[in-house]
Length: 232
Image 1 (cartoon, helix red, strand yellow):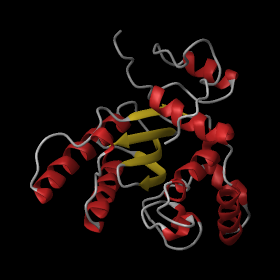
Image 2 (spheres, rainbow, N blue to C red; image 1 turned 180 degrees about the vertical axis):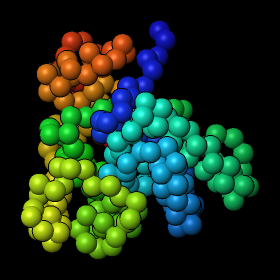
Image 3 (cartoon, rainbow, N blue to C red; image 1 turned 90 degrees about the vertical axis):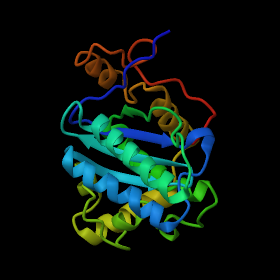
Image 4 (spheres, one colour; image 1 turned 45 degrees about the horizontal axis):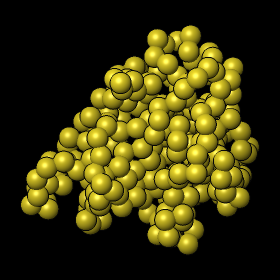
């Protein structure tokens, strides 16, 4: 069966997952993390893709982005993927593939899942045992949203402004949101929707998306994708 094209529509937030081949490490030093982050920043500007949240893990990465054009996200990921592989192979004196095939992504309904997706992304290092709390991990957007540092390339989604009337109130509210965590069902839905490429949201949201593209947006009818126990 031919695989479906990725579900990509401008103006919607997309949850993106890119993993190392056979789950191998994609970083060997702090310089590698910074190089990949710099490539993401430069190409996000070039292809007009707003970065809302990110985390760079040892063998994969998650992004929450909104492209302004239909080809913005594919062009961003292609440019970053190719450039980083050339850099990494040269620095490690290796050859061959680094990524596990194509990146995975899907659209998510902002009102229903955007803040949960941000918390999911920032909690990745804690779930993986790499940090006791998200603020201890340097390669995620958590520090920016909680006042630990300023990442000028981050574009807060409009929903972030609803967390408080002041900058400090929003930082405190987001820190509390992440501290509260997300449910196992949300975690599974966010992972599986991205890996399978089905839109994540309420039935009306998914049905509306289907009117905007010829590509199927749900496995069967309008609604949320089935949940699974697998997590990422």
